[in-house]
Amino acid sequence: MSIRPVKRLVTSTPTLEGAGVRLRRAFGFGETGDVDPFLLLDDFRSDRPADYAAGFPWHPHRGIETITYVLAGTVDHSDSLGNAGTIGPGDVQWMTAGSGIIHQEMPHGNERGQMHGFQLWANLPSSLKMTAPKYRDVTAADIPEVIDDDGTALKIISGSFWGRQGPVRDVAAEPQYLDVFVPPGRRRSLPVPTTRHAFAYVFQGGGRFANASEPQAVTTDVVGGEDAGSRYAENRSLVVFDSGDEVTVRAGEQGIRFLLVSGAPLGEPIAWRGPIVMNTQEELRQAFEEFRSGTFLKHER
Image (cartoon, rainbow, N blue to C red; front, side, top):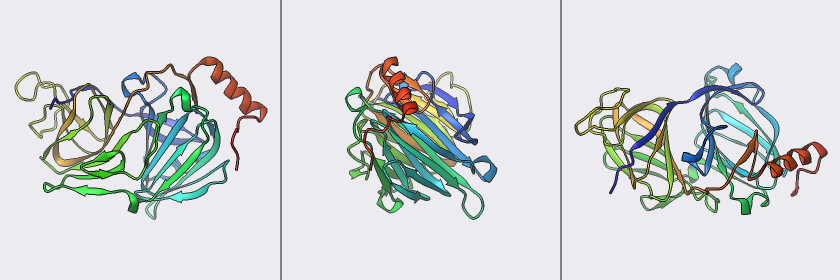
């Protein structure tokens, strides 16, 4: 087995999105080649309703899939296909925008005002850019959770891991999407196929990735010895991995919880503006012209 070294380690960036939602962007709207087929990852987290109450009113999407995972609070959603509902703690909304959909997402805090969730965008290959939109709600009860003898716990949202299959299937990128917790001081190696791009997003605690052996919290590369090349990642850190067939982490003194996401790269050209992602500038121009002229939706309820 070959350990994936850390290719890039960054802290998510404060961003204003929607009608004024304050969130943290791990990546997106820039060079995303090393996380292909993924395009964007947002971490929306606050205990102040003023940071999120304005939400994400009606807006279009085409050419992508959006994956929303809620940890605290709720998100009300509705779309041009007539779908409507609410997802809460542990639930997932997986939407294939395909040829075009218009939807809104309105977050609400829990009884203490807390709201926390993630939205990940996955690109669609050119052959599926104009596929019919579809939509799936996945409840927390449907997401398998596996707890190992050392206390390592994984929730499998999509893909197969440790003999269990996540509930979200038939997705173009064939992603593996895991919510991972490793207890304090524990070292774990998690297999990731070499054919995939992979990243981790830390949202609780911290730990050392790559050739991890020591739990202490340092924020620079280790120069030599067994820890050479390892990096310490803490809350709100994005870790992009280089090639290899396993990700290795040693949790710090508070343990570590992170999303571990991987997918097969598409390697296709990207023409991207706002919520629409196509392959050429002409396709992008046409999409916005159709939105302005009222011919954007190709499949309606």
